[in-house]
Image (tube, rainbow, N blue to C red; front, side, top):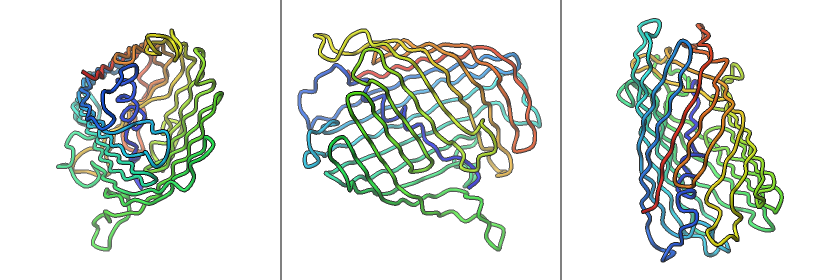
Length: 325
């Protein structure tokens, strides 16, 4: 497997829930359409990246059913971002890239169906099999009791897996596991997912106004360095508790993260570009609006697997708007 296939699952699945937080639905079977707008800015000594984006989320059914038998919901999120890299790149690499992400998830009692699509490239899809990934699969929830949930299944992925055929072409199909484990309690929430790559999320003291959040994910199964890992650890304070008359809709957090942008170049499966950095940041979370800013440092730019260059330090800024009208 040459490239990581990780879709931004944390963003894609939690933005609709955040946008809905504090807003009571009139009917459990209603369909909610949530527009999403975002803008990212990474400004470093030797590279500036602008990333405006837009998308839409669709939610139907009860997102937090009381029992397994009441589970019948659907989530669909589509996101598009336009990546503009300032300052000339080396080796005649293009300075404009596109990212397209889509996830469709349906849950009916213990049955879970999902479809994922991802493309980060200067020529998405049209640039060749290596510039996109399509995955679809099924999982069955074997355990659902006392705060524990375990779903297992399988899926089939279509992309360039790095498996070469005798004629020199790429083998496009490969089976993948579906694993989802979740544990919830008053003092600790934990989840592990493996659909395209391993992801871990946890929250310490999730029902308290002070809480600690952590996430860890491998974006490239062919891990070559710590730059192929994404992680985020933050201390959060919520302004109001869940039982407050206006609800828990706002808070702040401060933390540390390792992040990157990765692109596949169309027409050449041996060329790729990665811009990676670390950041200390602060976030204002108003549920429908989230603003993050911080100091970015130890940034690097990697061309393929051979050439790596330091980009210096700078700052990182991100704003996301997702509102259920």
